[in-house]
Length: 101
Image (cartoon, rainbow, N blue to C red; front, side, top):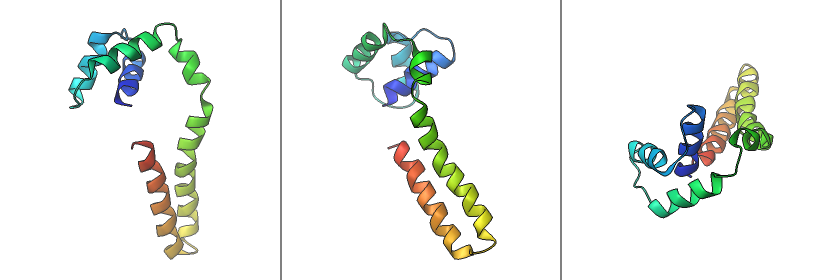
């Protein structure tokens, strides 16, 4: 997963997504670089328009926004039922933590 994040970061910064740059970003994150995975990802992304791929994935964005909305709703309910808000916040945090493995 860190390789995909590194590729997205490079793309966002208008840097070329190549083996050297991808390896540098992964190394900078503190992870060990698997050259086979780097080569496979670079080859897989060779014919992919990353902007179009990101636009075609609105479900992931909506899913990430849902726990944040639940936390906002929980704050509104906090005034009414403070005990339930803690559970809502915990559930939202568990949902967010599952996104980052």
